[in-house]
Image (cartoon, rainbow, N blue to C red; front, side, top):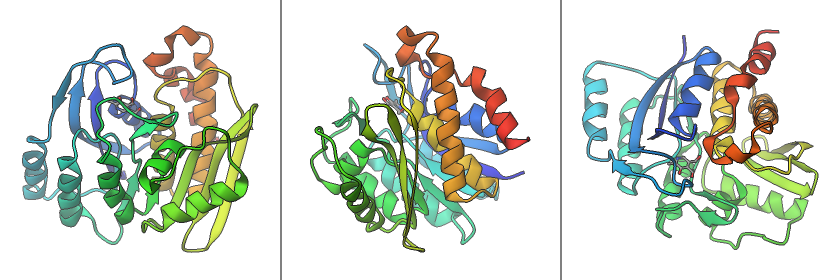
Length: 278
Ligand code: PXL
């Protein structure tokens, strides 16, 4: 069985980060180890939350794994709790990453043109370092703009502008880039991707729901990483991830007032299982 290590926070309520990655990757048949970056009572979009930073615990966990000879087929980073954790992840990579290890980076920084609560303005600059080292990165448009240090295009954008953003992101060093949450029309949304090795673009769009739900980026990233570990191409993995995220949203629309509680992926697992094991 393939083993992935995911490095992100434990938000006790709100079904994002680890509480999305673990069930999704497990359903996909992948053993999932976790390196928690922080423990929060709820994710940071709730009206209040506690935050216990685990930066000081991470090196000891990593050293213990090293002493035990533990290995990973893939490393998937998400929400990091402090700038210092970027260096800790870099140290982990120098010890555990081999030529065959997939490094999948979701540079979790913000959404809707704004950084998430608690992140300093220089955090995107540090997150860029992980994007440089990655095989695959999956930022949303907000995260892409923050890392490229360009204004968020509130008033819309063209296909050409998105291609330029993809080129800019690939310029950091990652081999493949997926930009999520791309929308050229009110009723459609999807992703655009760029394979820097083949100099190829690809994209996928589908129906857009008027409601917005928290945690969909984590559902997308987890499913996409899982697809890659199952041997799918990046394009096929991202299409699967997009379809599953959409199905999760569909299932959640019955309870739209719950938007901060994460999507109902539990109800959408039959869809994912059917796609994986037809
Ligand atoms: O879903 C991204 C995310 C992950 N972890 C925490 C968050 C957020 C977004 O708000 O607050 C703690």
